[in-house]
Length: 394
Image 1 (cartoon, helix red, strand yellow):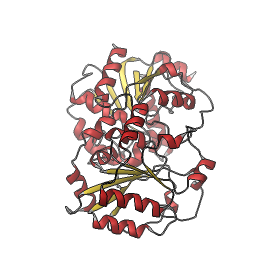
Image 2 (cartoon, one colour; image 1 turned 90 degrees about the vertical axis):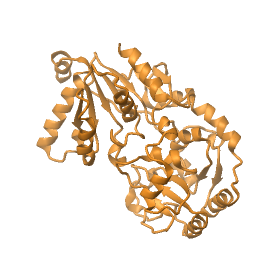
Image 3 (tube, one colour; image 1 turned 60 degrees about the vertical axis):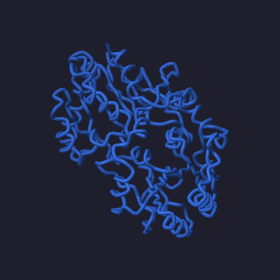
Image 4 (cartoon, helix red, strand yellow; image 1 turned 30 degrees about the horizontal axis):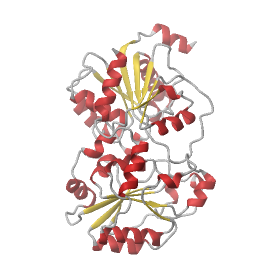
């Protein structure tokens, strides 16, 4: 009955609503530092190029701390209305009114643009079309959704292989997938801040010359664990990595996953290893864009980073345990790992030493080969996707 009311009594005008990924709250991604979220990156392109001026654009904001700067930025755009995410409201009365407001804006939009292909909208009506810009190329195994809740008409993907596996997980027909690349990939080539500015922002110093980004994913087996470890596993041999970094004027910036159980990860203090602090000035994809190399494990960020053709180091300290508790989307995952693989911190140290002291890089060709498999398009994705959407909503 409620869905019938929304479909038939609310004016479904030719408006659109932009819904970033819910991880934006943890990552502090907003229209101000837009570069890591696909929907926000697309919206900035739309606004910067004066597109869709004749449409109302409703933007869902997940970052309450950015609200004032968002309003300040958007004040020249009279057609953009910011909506608070109702799910962040703790008080029941306020939640109710915020959710009703959100529902009205959602239902009055003919088109929905979101960043998470796994999001489902039970209140979607039959007049609406959803463009999911997606958020990942699969690496680790994702269990298929239990049931299909609503139709997603258009899903943006990075490649045929990605479309195939995301289709299985999301229960969306593969014919609804379009391999156009991700808008955030453009940020890798054109970061908001330059390398020197980002290093100064992180360290407060100008003495460092290289950045390595470490992006460990979350562990399902640690969800309820109380056993402490550091960000490099349970090894206590991180000190010599820090000494190597000091010698080579390099820093490692660690970006933890929003789903990680952060209570078990011990704080540590090293002169050249820093935790990425989400901030309003730049985001992860700006950091990746200016970096010199990537350390990762089972994170899909790896497939995005391939486009830069910079060295990648895989740190699989819990490889067997991860296979047994989560697993990978592909049976032959190691064939797609275009970088040196370390199974303990000493092996990782050796790989980093060869890179930092000897400029050792033997995976140049493999990176290009794997990139061709997982990234059909390399640049100008945002413009390409905008033109695709524009053509569909005329």
